[in-house]
Length: 71
Image (cartoon, rainbow, N blue to C red; front, side, top):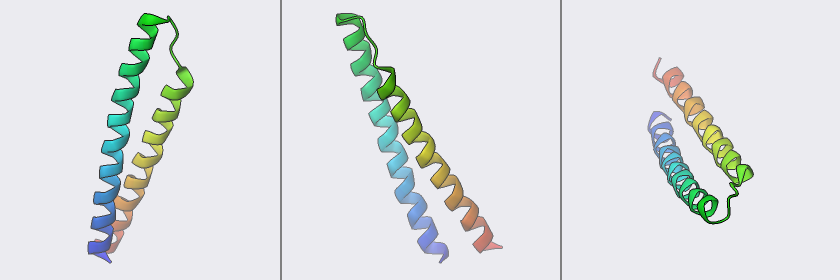
């Protein structure tokens, strides 16, 4: 069980990295568009932030479960 939780935490860490990369790409794209058009899409940015928070909470939940198993 402990090893399975560690593996799942690793998978979610990779998901978190992917969300961070998506956020950086999104910010770059929005900055480029803002320079050209003068508009920033706040909905997309907020969606990426929500996705980051959800993944972070999942990792936190898994780490707490791992701590419980190790006790």
